[in-house]
Length: 185
Image 1 (cartoon, one colour):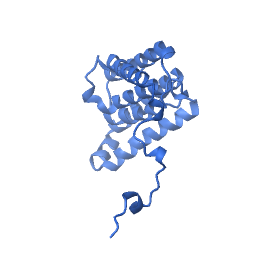
Image 2 (image 1 turned 90 degrees about the vertical axis):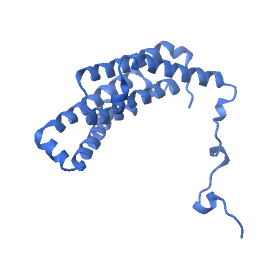
Image 3 (image 1 turned 180 degrees about the vertical axis):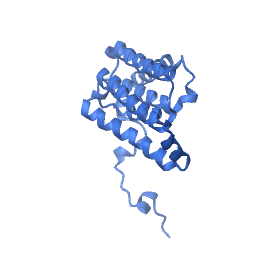
Image 4 (image 1 turned 135 degrees about the vertical axis):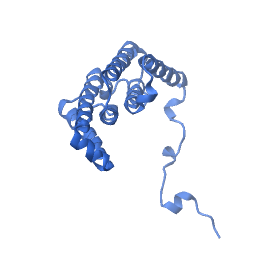
């Protein structure tokens, strides 16, 4: 009996170019990739050092995604200060509004009786954030995570301030280093 490959079994055809494990643009540019990854990590550390983010991981996951966008695709439209700051402002506002709705007693009792209302409102936060970013031309994909994180965590003023400061620090670091960065995608 002839043994079939997993691609034949699932009916997938993968072009050899897409089956590679290493980006061909990496060749000769390892130092650039490594330095930009280190810069992203350093900027993120600087932004997050003021707050224990483990307890607020749902909120700060969006910051890590923003660091990726800013330092891997620094010249993309979604990495401009308008899109980064604007997207996070809009989505944090939406997330905070949904978090406030979740504290209303009628909604809170519905949430206590099942996860559907909670999940519905969390999904609504993301959908509204995406719509408002599109309307205002401030699309920043990681900001959708901000809407979700703020909606489910119901952050206090300190967390919101630290989050905003983290976004600003990341944008400032990226702008300062922009002359040394290149798009890696």
